[in-house]
Length: 493
Image (cartoon, rainbow, N blue to C red; front, side):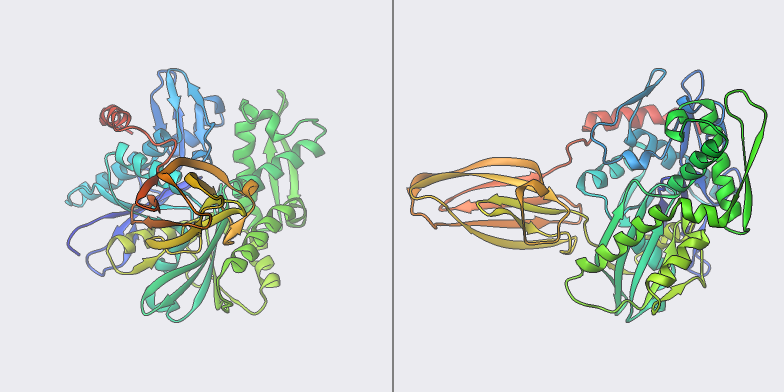
């Protein structure tokens, strides 16, 4: 390997960093300064508005959730997210950059102990459902953290890579990735050492924390309190209860009953015992949502292909109910648990990808279409390869037409044509060719998406053309990136 590059799993609840061991060529996770393999994706601002990241920040959530930021990855696609803590303006890019900086700083300290040079290049993983906006914002977070981001990799693809190329050769696998805050499912085919993503789906507001909230809500209800977690999440009791619920959930993964200990409204420490059966009943609807996503992903495949195996990824997939439900839903498909590293698999796969050991054909989670008289005609489908070139043909709809408005819509459909209401208008430009033409004159759209994920659409009629470039709405300017990057240089985490 000519250069060393980190593979980073920037997770919703926990993050992880890995690299390749030069001695055996295998990926290995680098422990943080708390001697743990994963780092909580939590940032806490103290009374001086100084950020604290990781384990200490998570512990401070109990004391002051209003100065804590967690699950920020869920907000990466939220155009309306706005929050401040003290003098600090909070943004998904800024918080993600702090988490990335903590991971890399800790890893480089560990390397220094071993007499190795620091690394400042990385491949960062992203959910398969992330669109163009989220990809660019994740790259910018890496840049603010002082990293050279070599590439972004879909999390389910990284998980599959962690098992090794030979493991799934000639097979089609489903990656079921239930993390702390998000859910992803991808169907991937391995052929001649190349990974091809056939379909993806997911829910960026579904993960282990939702199971935790169900425990909190049940605990409050059976204890006679007429409130829910949503009512108290910004209070001291809410921060402490959600962490206690997480511990209860983890215990229920290995035992039939577990205590949920909490304080509310100035009361003494109380305990509610919860059984596995009750927990399963409380969260059945959440599990149903993951199954709905798996079937939707199967329906997105362009051809009928038998799924050979299912691999479980994400810390929340440790819950026994997950495997039990998948076995009932897909009784003829093998579920892989032989190398069960749900918290580490994604980072290890990213490290392998960074070492250029595999060819990847990932898919996007979005389609892009042009509005016509019959609806939105998708010129780039979510089932098309990430790197794509294509041509679509249209015709003018009126006699004597001399111009047309090109309206580009983003949507999540895999259908060639959809109703206008199912898409979001993201770009529009007028194409004028300056003279009347007969009805039915050809209009041609040339579509290209490169490795950077930027979509270019050039539309031509007669001798005139316009080019539309789909850029993220919320990306930081070069000046904003530089300002944050300079600010981060003085931050010690």
